[in-house]
Image (cartoon, rainbow, N blue to C red; front, side, top):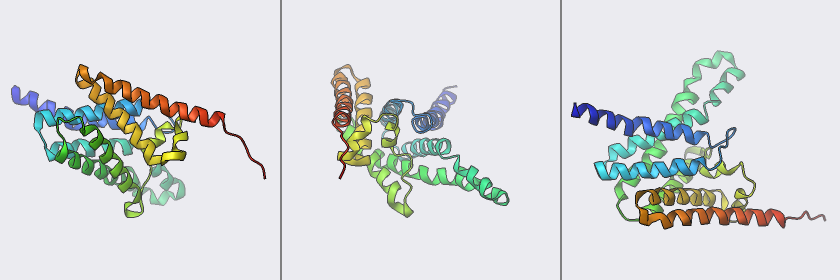
Length: 228
């Protein structure tokens, strides 16, 4: 009975939870744009890494599988519409549908799997894992955007497209800078859930978001058209 429970726990950790998180992350992008949802999703992703580390240590297998399933679920639900373009272009090519529908999400998911393997090598109980987690996410977003002709879709910064205020900071730090701050806030929130004394990190995350919004609001308010 105990082995059954352990097996179910592993299945939940490796497949069910990452699949749900990937699906929900897709709802953060067009056309759904659920506000602040990615921050919560990534915070839970951070907590999941902590759980794996505490129960299975630096398991490359567990880290990789959760990253791959998360990425596959995310891309499967966010770019599935690409397969529709094949039948629209030529119905005789419908047999190629599995390529963009299944193969492309699987290939792109490898970046999240590799990211998780990188995380597994350096994960620890140190609070600095917040910065490491954030940096590794951005590194693999960059790699995905430029390697093999690049696929810069589904960047975390794009989840702010619902707010003209939040995206203003892109003029200063760029798309990847906004992704970095978003993931950092998420990881800080995740860290604050672990211990009560980490509550200060929740305050810091909220402060960063307020500053981002304030900058955007001020920039829009002071914007003026120039005619030459």
